[in-house]
Amino acid sequence: MAYWELYIKVMKTLTVTELNNYIKNIINDDYILKNVLVEGEISNLKLSYGNYYFSLKDDNASVACIIFANTINFNQDILREGVSVKIKGRVSVYEKQGRYAIYVNELENVGLGKFYEELEKLKRELYERGMFDPMYKKEIPKYANNVGIVTAKNGAAIKDIMKTMLDKNPYVRAVLYPAIVQGDKSKDSIVQGIKTLDAMGLDVIIVGRGGGSKDDLNCFNAVEVAYAIFNAKTPIISAVGHEIDITIADMVADIRVATPTAAGNIATFDYKELMNTYDEYILDMKDIVNGKIENYNEQIDIYEQQLNGFSPLSKIREKKSTLLFKNEKIRNLFFRKFENTKNVLEMLSNKIKYSNPLNNLKNGMAYVTHNNDYVSTVKKIKKGDKLKLIFKDGVATSIVDKIKKKNIAAK
Image 1 (cartoon, rainbow, N blue to C red):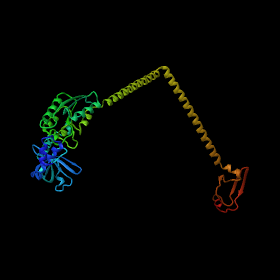
Image 2 (cartoon, helix red, strand yellow):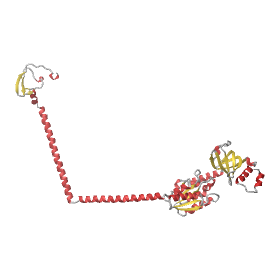
Image 3 (tube, helix red, strand yellow):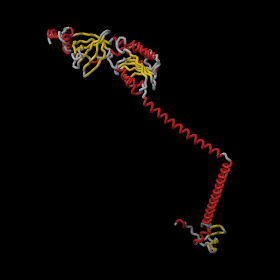
Image 4 (cartoon, rainbow, N blue to C red):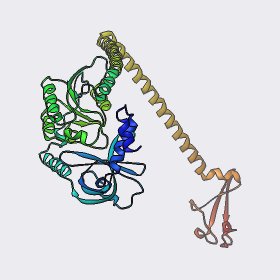
């Protein structure tokens, strides 16, 4: 559409598309905006489908920038949060949203940005003062019932927190301080909210907001907010809804969670679970009491048995039982001794019986003596000796006529 045609039509109502198209044509035709050099600090860097999206900012303003995936005149390592760069590109308008941006062709690193350096310096100072030290972290109460919340009154964060808490515990008491969580007045508002709720003696305080750009979260990097959190007597949960970026408030808080929903979950105990636990405790207590009663009854039975044991009749019965036992024991010992002695005598009798040489006479052998000495070898006799031969049925004498030495047993 030519300018003069739009000029004629401007007397009538324009569509949004026509207006954005007109502005785009003006910018595209501007000689300076076709090739601009701009210096600033990278913020809110994102990568999507190979394209880089970020803001270039200075102390007072920011501008959207885009580097398409097919751009080749830059080093990707330069693209980092907080880096100060000099860019070259053209300014144009994205008609669908009516937003203008710099479409970058070249990129040059000129060092760390001012905002990044100041933030890192502040982190180092707070770290050296011990404000990030775990030893100062307060424990979140397990059964908190009074919860303070510092966040925007009409934001998504308060809705998510309240829904989560009421789902877990319909009796929880929540106190909201409607703080400003973005912009110039936000840090003072957050500090005042923390101090106000801390003075109320609540169980825990949630400080945070929903998601946003890195610039939107700057109030949670303020030193005033850090000291307000650190000096609070009440345990504080930081719930700045930006999972990737960690703010100073996250680092100082007693516990950091990624979302307001997670904060509501941690700050509240499960009422149904507590009631189930209570019922289990009641049953356990009944079991313990019944067990005690049963133990006492058993102890009474033991005492009764002990009392019965002390009576004279019980003693007499005990002694009688002992005597009977000992009598039986002596009797068993006597019979065992008698049997053992009997066995020994029988063994000795058999031994004597089988060792008597006269027993061998029954088998046709003779018992030979010389001068009443038993002759067991020819070495004890000589020719002419008179021998006595005793048989089983009589005695005979014999004169040695001839001696022939020979080992008959060896054959």
